[in-house]
Length: 393
Image (tube, rainbow, N blue to C red; front, side, top):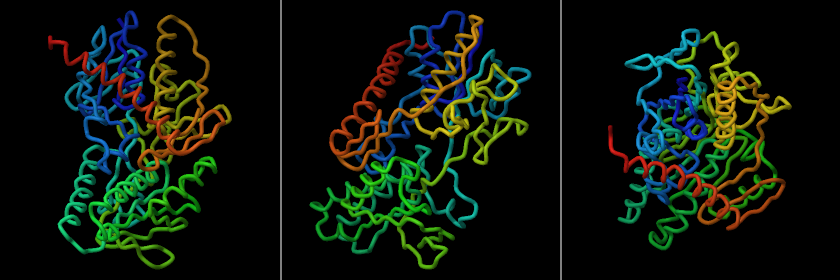
């Protein structure tokens, strides 16, 4: 019996488990510091109040019990790795493995050169922080409903995919609140800030233009080429002078790989992503794979693939296949990852999409994205429901 350990219960980790579950001769273990799988791609709806927590989080232990041959779930924080001894070190125990798939994801990276950002900004990579932000947003709406007259500005720093989706969904919600709040709704503003010359840097011009137009229609103020010097308790100070007053700040500007437990002798990028070989192994160890946001993955032209759920799942499928091949003595060709498309939720039933060379926006793009999300959530939810019905041993 070979033990395969999957470290991390995000998109990549769950897909790897799914592909390996039931493989003959394999004992499968999933490790995560949290009890739940957090659907980060849907966080924009949660913090704006259009989705409930049960729509973005699934209990991992129940999910693991839902397989025909249950997967062992270990809720522990990972503290170290000894690949020579085939040991994953946890808070209270050492877990041996024959094959290890690192899918520990990433966390929000607060740039050290922006004074005060970490102290005053909310990240969206952790459910707890998103919960705190949602509570503040709902509190503001409630106070406005009760007649508060203070000006309020919600600042979103980082105009990548997450920042644009969060700003758009909140802008849409404020449009809906106009009928409830009346003139007071105009006292709540949203400002999206980024140092780049455009929102969604690196994405197709169609997505950029469509998103820009939608944000403007929702009343979101977009400030690009805006370099931030510091953030204090009331204002965002810009290097070129001037300041943006705010009530609270969401930061979506960058990530850093959750790889602190991996010995420093292994190569990491400047954002702590593990540099992997063409077969997604950490160098020198064919039994250790790194996938998803914790890995620096490139395509066959050597270009870095974006840290998206799509790439996490594709790299997970590859790693699972490589493990199965290794168990039967077969070699696996290098990983050939690519983005098949991109969907952006832009508030309400509106979105923009680029897929297989096609570009479209509006309700059709929104419903296409919802279909993809629904199928994913349905699958993991059914698995968790099956696990719920299984009696504990």
